[in-house]
Length: 416
Image 1 (cartoon, rainbow, N blue to C red):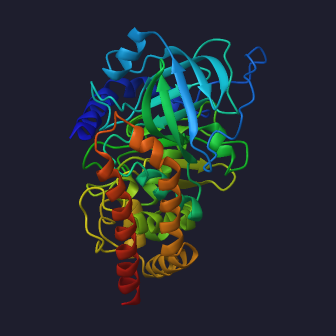
Image 2 (image 1 turned 90 degrees about the vertical axis):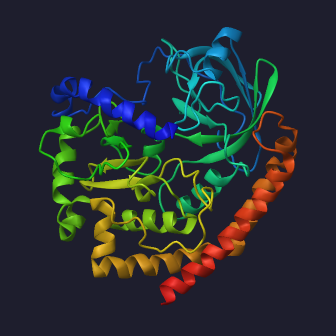
Image 3 (image 1 turned 135 degrees about the vertical axis):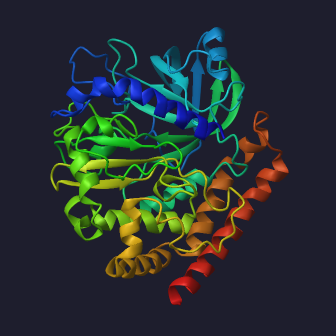
């Protein structure tokens, strides 16, 4: 798969830059290799006020980009990597000049993808500030999700249990041409972390190891062994540095020491949300730990797992809803502790029941219906999507049926 190929490329590249990271990673303040931009420069341009919250879930947002045709072609064909292209953004009618745009995604990031996901960086260029407090947002093409809502619906479940990125839907236009329906997604950075944790902020990492590699396996005490690959730093000038990673990884090798290093309630909540939505990616992935975030809170001195990119959910990969609640939890040291410690198993299973009671299947299905009603007309008019309108309509019903079957199966599993 393309996604796995990209991971292998990252792994090879990490060896070349690991030596450079030793000095920076071992001292306080973190590293500078991250997506968290901006700063506190008082000379930064003051951006206009948005017409509404950037991720208002009660509206279908309107996002328009204007850039040179050459730059747009380079995004669709992914010919210039992560270089920021200059663009003018109109967000729900509010014009934001001089933003940076680049292609994004993993398995969806391939040349010629007409539904290419993108990142928009408001402070990509000198003198430009944030917009609505954000340095960056993600707009996702959902090229392979015929329902166009799996990620947003899964984040609804995660957000009911733990900190999770905000999301909404949008119609996207580029140079006057409609590109159809996209998902707007909040990124994990200083702004989103501050919404859930107290300042001063600690280090934030995107954890995405090569296929089959356990990022929670202890190797040695050198921070550069883990940072920047597979622990990719995402906050500049954090209160603590990368020196917090080796003791954490070393400490969790003993499952009974977990509470010293981990917010266990948060870990269990993550596992519960993953189990309900039946994600095949993330910390509890089908092939082992995959793309997710970890945040070290200097107030509590423990790590907090955070969800990211839960698009492969609700049977998206052809799974059936009978997946066992401990399936795949033995593939990394962090979730092994939940599986192997009897008191954590009790808490995990009780939290599954509690979560299904607080988010009844009728509520989850009603959320899917509301999303469908919001995007239906725009999705039907989307001529660039990779599937027909009948498939889109069917996929929404299929998600609702899958979720109902999953709930019923989970009740059986925890009942037994």
